Image (cartoon, rainbow, N blue to C red; front, side, top):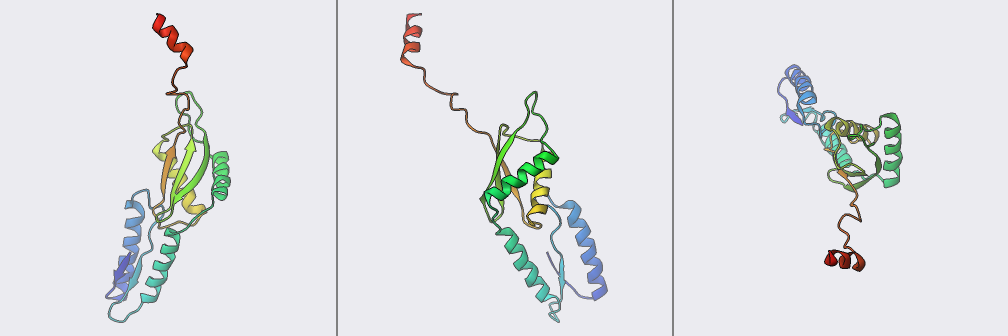
Length: 165
């Protein structure tokens, strides 16, 4: 977020106020708060910092993380804070992979297609912190594997029994 400043003291107060506002009002997808940079369009003060922040945010937005690194991270997170149970079944998250950069998008495969929103926020915040993705909108999707036996066609012997009945 850039803030064109007029008076130096007013700009610092505005910068502090914006930082506090955005820290608490941004959607959960943006873990942390975006950097607020004050600059002067008249004197050019702060323009260098603005460009440095833009480049830094672009690198975070474009970051790729290997699947092996992500899986080691997921196992450590699961040991520290396992997911809540889904009914009577234990929720198992098996592996994670980054399916896309720009923005960083991750897919977690497990035995549940949904997790509580609070646990997904926890995972998003942990990902953001561990891989330095602050300021980038981190997306997380959950996938449940297909059951290979769900729509399997019945064999010939079973069809003959149905016809006889």
